[in-house]
Image (cartoon, rainbow over all chains, first blue to last red; front, side):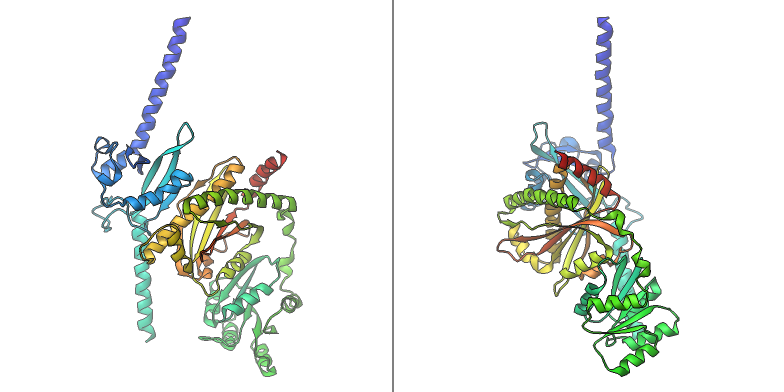
Length: 170
Length: 330
């Protein structure tokens, strides 16, 4: 009887482990960049999207500061951006209209799209720890290249049309 | 649904006429700056009633009436003009205007005229009964937002080291036309930038709208300790930062009390340096009536004017009311 109980609990433990495994797999493969960093801006999680686009392996970036890996990102700027996320637990957002990219990645479709780089929307979301404090932030990086090129095309068409209208009215 | 178009080249006049329309008007109010715009709007879709000024650039009132007649558009037109010569009256009625009201317009006169020509009949079906805001419920909403603002205020002053003047939130059920008016009050000489952000959770959904007058940005930069010159790019950045802060703190304050959590979508820039009318002209027919919570922020010693408007969808009301009832029981 006892041995079957043991079997039961070890089976549950195995199930949990398997579940954990495919959940991690999901984070790895989802087509959104996921980065977790702490108050010192040291990287804790770096998923497959980030790895593929940056060419940096998780082992290359783990526990390293974002600023040492990406010198283009300004310390003061990111500190100001993430302060409310740490202290107020609100989300912070960056849109591609505001700054085209945070990480300079190459465009996903190098052949059929003419965007020079990947336009990105970025969300900073607080991660509340088991003790109720926010020690880490989850940063999500979305590829907005298609939306950005569509909007840019639309704008240039509008400008063209206005010019044509002006010529026609002369 | 009644669609009213106010055509006048003066912003003040447009606002003044809009304010004279019946408060409970079931429908939308749109604006045009001259006759050509009005004709385009009429051709574009339904304009049931046109309130038309006479002296305007591009295409004046007479020309507009003539075109309506020639194109057989059948738009019921009331002329609103400062020109009180009897000849003007005769001319416009010959051109098909159904009435003539002298500027400055007063509410009774305009409503009387609308009644006289039976233009309000369609609008006066008692649709209001189902969606009236009970005084007690309204108080409750107001209190919830007050508390949320209190929390948000203390958080904000912690981050920014300034005293946040806590505004009294204004809770009301509004219609599209009223949102227009609410926003056109903002739209005086100043230009405005806006951000909207969707939020949802537990069957409650809505949109937060943050409008910042452009003159505020210098001081916003000061408060967020940004020393660079405030150009367009930086303004956009400040706008997003301010939106993240104000919308985030207010929503989480409300969610905490209702014991729930809101997910926020990515904020969308509504446009920089546009007039408010342009900002919301895009999507004005998608909804009829909605719960609006309006908060005007001010900061001690700074020239910052920004308004946060939380709009909840009609479907969300039941869930919200249930949650509030729960809160009131406690």
